Image 1 (cartoon, one colour):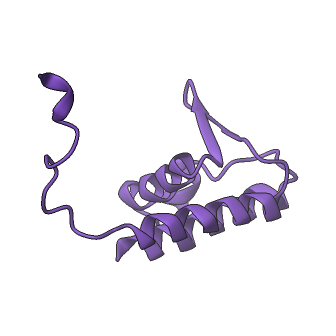
Image 2 (image 1 turned 30 degrees about the vertical axis):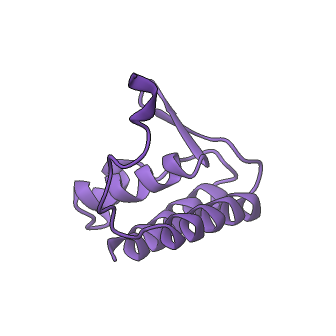
Length: 101
């Protein structure tokens, strides 16, 4: 599961943010300088966006929680929820078609 890798990277990004007192974000340029390919940075950042920890406003990422602990809690709960429902979706169209008639 690439999710765990993205999770670890997301935590890394949050640590960087927390250590700078919320002043700096682990940007793609920063990630590249640490040897991360774009895709790796994007996956981690997307996870933070999906979990609601981060909002990207005109390319400027903004952390929506007030602390590292809160961010970790929210991220953790999100990943847990996603992992618990990541059963292969075999019948995507079984429900939701009734409102057509």
